[in-house]
Image (cartoon, rainbow, N blue to C red; front, side, top):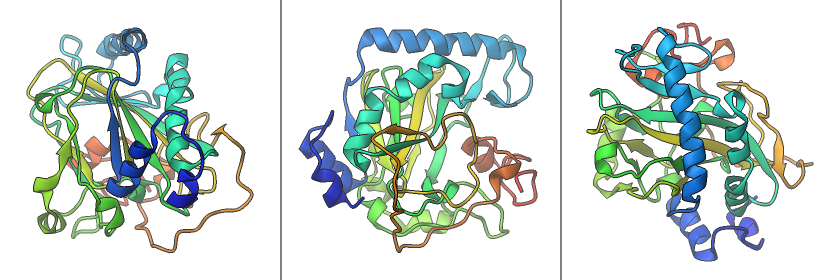
Length: 304
């Protein structure tokens, strides 16, 4: 659907000003959308997974572990597919967040994926500037990601920053000069952007950020050692169809969670960069940006 068509439908959660801001800037933030009791429920489950990770020594199908992870000092970069790991995460993904997605992609909403990212103050937890849609091209640019802050987040916690209006600009190459996938913009492209205009979201737990798949964004390195978690769920309009393998296929991927299936595909004429073939597996953006073997950083590195 076009933005005009989306805005013609009455809002479910967001007000019209917030919806218009999203389409103008490529992102929007809403403070304290989720109540403290619900955040506490989610936090308790997150703590269970952190504790479970103490028995893991290498990244696998559930955890992407940071260098230095050990039983005494668990360092998870990502809990993969949380909606598959615990029913509560699927409950969250299909609750009010799905209504937020409907306010911005239209009444027919498809679930794309979920992930739970952490910051651990290990000196390597900055996420470089990137755009999402190059990881999973679709026939149009409706896909968006909703980030749910599970703890109060300030700049020192590694807040996420968005470059307003960048969704209306070009898509950038996220391969390096050797043809290796890095999952982030090249330094020469970053130099052409006015990064000083990036807006970082500092907000209390229960707040959300929503960004479009074309929006340039990244996060700061954290300076606090408490493992800040950020729950991310991605959605798309039902008329947006992927045309490359899903980075992490899982139950509910492609499931219509609001409205009805599309009978016609909507094709945006703007081209999209094609990622490596993810059908062999995928680790995380952290591994890709760090150039770790098997992360998808290179087309022949086990992610073929």
